[in-house]
Image (cartoon, rainbow, N blue to C red):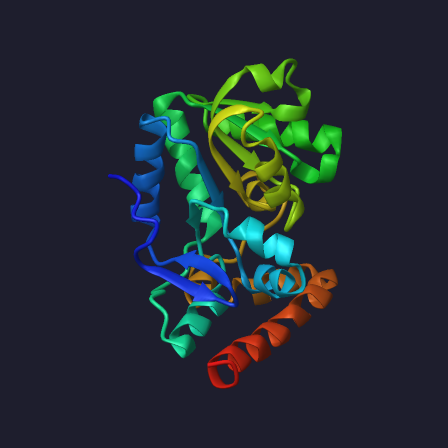
Length: 241
């Protein structure tokens, strides 16, 4: 099915976000890979949008995406307040897991860049775990692959973290022969056991962020952006109209 980029699009703090479901976006990405239609997928959460308010260039980069998924329950709450067409969260980690399942089935080539903060042994161990888990896929670390820019990939997962991964994708979009470029942060850490993920029922009610804060207390500074996000959304609703 072709993309309908202009339909069902919410606009929160100047950033477009797609109102979709995991199944629908998975079908669209599969269609795009079959048609070899180059695609950029970003997964903004409230922290992204707060940073985008400070950085117009980052906001422009986020709006460059072909598919922009609301990876944070805060975006769904904000959309309801603003009367925007955004029904539910689509977790980037869940989409990555589904895409790797498809890659396993279809024997796709998947490259990973920026994983494990550049720690060579850890990123190689992570690749080994992924390859064992998805033996039908051909998974490689881009930094460790000779002539990586000459190879053809179905998917590239950029894992450098907010801002860096999106910038890397835009910069390399036309330099590397790949179809789907997706910024995924630490999603692979969940799939490979480097970081425990919240139980399903906690994710279902939108409190995965709290679970991560409990097991990674150093993240508390990042959670301050949630308060800023709420204020910015209220200002957009009641002050800026």
